[in-house]
Image (tube, rainbow, N blue to C red; front, side, top):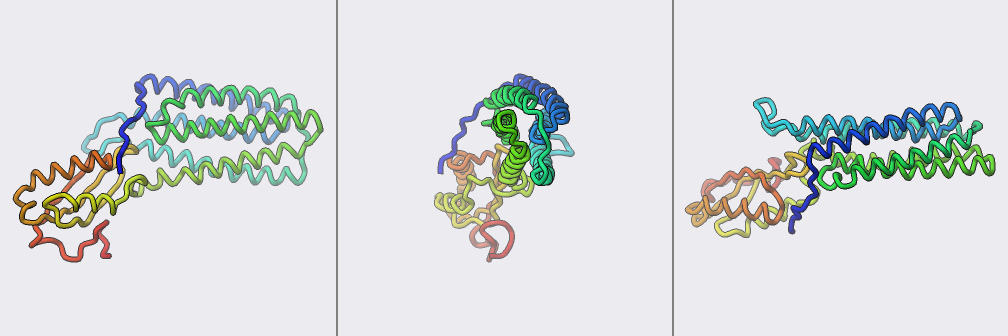
Length: 306
């Protein structure tokens, strides 16, 4: 298994400016859509506004998290503050799930008794939303390759743009055919998509906060690769986790034979070099044991007996 180290890096100040512009654009759009939704009676427009508001909140949290994450390690946070972006992602996805459930509730009630909706207001504000959502997606597109948090924001704004297309189409159908039921139907579609996006994405920050293994690294393959090195007899108590969202880490016990014990420093250098080259693991803590004094019955992965 090879690891691709290529990532697109944006200057932090430039990235902060992009996120700041996106925040203000979404804030203005949210206010306009809420007012327009109340005036026109369109729940779909308010649903889209709530989605945009959640994206604005996500952007604010991401902006603050980016600032905090750049703080250096200290005596209170010896691993640094970068994982704050993972916490921010979990908060954002949880909020989206709550909003999606609320919109399904409101949309279902309106589907039973659809109210009249001012189609032109929906079409005009939906078109403005489409332009701003597209702008926000473009601002975050080049930043999303190196950050799961920004990638989530990019996907949200891309989904906002698609939702705005639905809002405009719904407004047009109301103008042409007086199909009032279209508004709650589009609301339910938007809510369903919000829930789908949030539920499928929330697992990533949860896994990182639970110190789960990086999804692209096979723990058994790591062990087998280490064991193939000269001087290594076996490996146990292996742990894999992500110190930061793009920084996998490892610690394990390596049992050495007589040859390996005599060249321990060489074995250590080879293991660390292999971990970087094959799996992209730049941080590793290795503990060596002589095969005559190795831990009997130790688990290969984790500390539970297997």
